Length: 161
Ligand SMILES: [Zn+2]
Image (tube, rainbow, N blue to C red; front, side, top):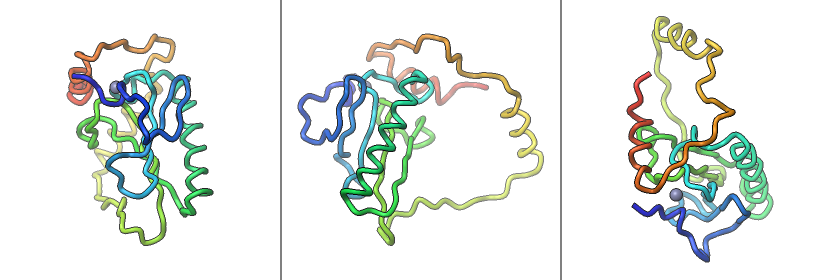
């Protein structure tokens, strides 16, 4: 399946482009100025993005956020990554949403908290603080062709710990 974010040509919604990255206005925005920022290379999920690109992406995200503050007179931004189907990811191409915010803009990114048992908290602490590195930062990024995109997304979501 062709990925629409890998096949952008002279799109009028593009607001930033470098040799490695594109930022474009969302064609399905939640507020005016809602930006999608993503690598030109096709990565389905966050863990596939090499460290140097992650670093640069967040520098660019910060620049775009500042630009939104200065040019569009907003009073906040949300930076949001939907990583995996369970997290609401729809497009099979990793991206950062940069969402401009104003007071009383009607968006509600609050989510209700719920109590977690001491056992589950201790279990999470035990699993997450082991110091074990789960991403090999020296490894070459996973190469994929378009036909594997959906499979990798599904594998990630269904991965057994
Ligand atoms: Zn893509």
